[in-house]
Length: 605
Image (cartoon, rainbow, N blue to C red):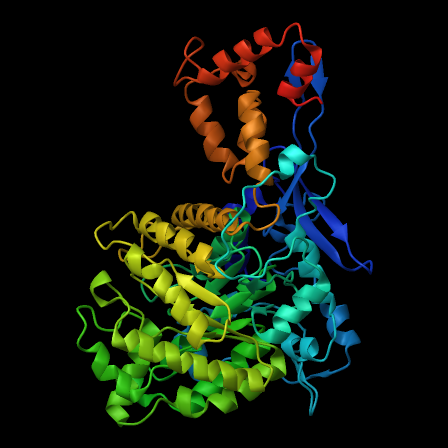
């Protein structure tokens, strides 16, 4: 290895957090029906409850964990080798795939890498796979034949979050309003299979990304979030993007999209895939455009097809494909205040206008399906006509494309290709439910994957908040996955801190949606937090939150001593004006002569 490569890898800034669990937390694994189905979860240990001279142990809380092996302190990491191929035994056991010679980047792309692609090429001797002749290797294909795969069992265990054995007070949950969803009390492997067979959920897992831990996206499951990363012609490097990926999944990204448009696109994607335990999505038209020097009019079906196969063999799990941008929709978008704000949508609109014909993404959609089912790549049918301003929300262009996406979904399903639908965008709050209702109607309950939506246009620098407001609402109404937005939205390329801010904000939105839907077990963590607050268990409060580091930092800014972790007040109210402290003292005084009342009020009964 050359010295430059070694120096860059050793300088990766997130190495300091690899193997470091969150506060009071450890990585645990729940085993399935076979020993190699080991479902990761984060176990949050809690301190004892104390009331007078009595103590009571509190159970650990198990939460969904997207961080992969990176928070498992028993595992040693090497970015240059990548993660273990945990799904390879399952894939090989099905005996329906074959090894092929890799396509790889073209000579022109290597030259476009500015001479440094060799230093960053990922060193691996693993050959890509594709379906054996006549085979279909999608999870939907298996599901429709009544087969429960190891991937389906894995996600069923994962969705339940090991909530059995908790007491009734922690399991207490307000009744939700699910707007017609069909959420069972317990997620079983058979339920997962049936939802995939119906097209209401997807497990995005390319057979060439065996490092990924199975996860599910669907209306009747936990709301997921996606984080976008990727370089540009002006900023970032290969290793910067690997760092962002590891950082993103640490804070809760369920999937990551690599939207790189700068140099070394192939190498950047390879490094991310080999080190990612979550599904990776891309927009292949970006790389295809690089192959023709950025000239949209020079794109061809053949160039695009080769790009799809190149990325399929690397292991990309889902493709955003803007096949719903039709020639006759382009004039509709020209009436808007902000035109077409989707990069992929604008590229294809320009191509349609220049050639005065339908997009090759639309006319070759069946050919694309053939590629998708050979690798089990999921469609993320792109919203190329999404509104980029409140002014343009729910307009004719947006709805026309949505209807086309519904037609394309049915074509994909005929090939047993898993499919989700991308959605807006900028939408005022009063129009959000209409977006969800129309998507369910026109797209046959295929999972909805939305950017926000942003509910106002006047908060640059705070659009992670404007979009999370819309995200919480549309997640409640039925959206399956939310695409995060960072504070840099509309302003610049996000850095590591922006990524964290966007992810935590959208984890809050997704969780709020799960609570509102009444997803079983969604309130357990909230109940544990409430109990910890009332009992002034400060460390448990930090650990149970989405960002333990930030909450402890805020607390310790004014009460830094270790003894303050046991105090019954914070710096906001002080020792004499804390309402919870006053109430606890009152409760204990009133119940002093009634032992049963003491036990009931403090949770010992």
